Amino acid sequence: MACKKETVPFSGTPEQEAALKKVIAELKDTKGALMPIMQQAQDIYGYLPIEVQTMISDETGIPLEKIYGVSTFYSQFALQPKGKYQISVCLGTACYVKGSGAIFSKLEELLGITNGECTPDGRFSLDSCRCVGACGLAPVMMINDEVYGRLTPDDIPGILAKYN
Image 1 (tube, rainbow, N blue to C red):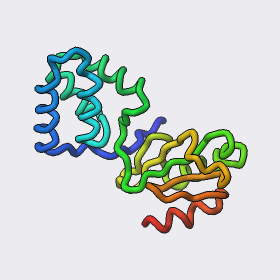
Image 2: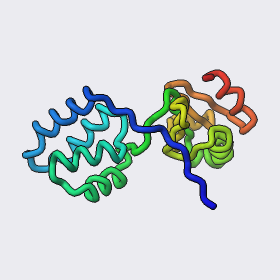
Image 3: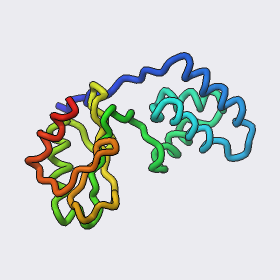
Image 4: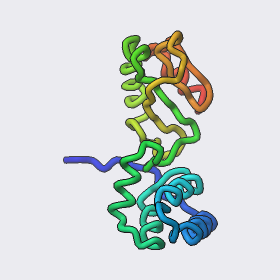
């Protein structure tokens, strides 16, 4: 029996919807408008949930399948919201050979989420990245703009506790 993963519910505001509709009205007749519309929609909402993609489709006449295809193809688009505390774990070569895979696994275990997801309370989101430019501190993770280096899986609970 498969269990349904709990996700953060969509909570767009009327102001956000009005802002998105204004952007679409300004751009929809411009050639190649989909990407700029999607980028501005993500700026407005912070991510591109299916509800926002549907609004874009309804307002532009572009099929939802195409919008979803673009949103999943380009890494700049997030389909899940980002948490108050955005955790990025470097899985680049230097970090990976020094154990960042185990760091990432420990975070998945403790937070109950995986790459690209956000905890149901909106506190933490988890993403992998390729390099943060701190190879001498490998393995490295960042929480928002704070860098944590020379990590072991045993360090993770104490670091997370600082954000509760």
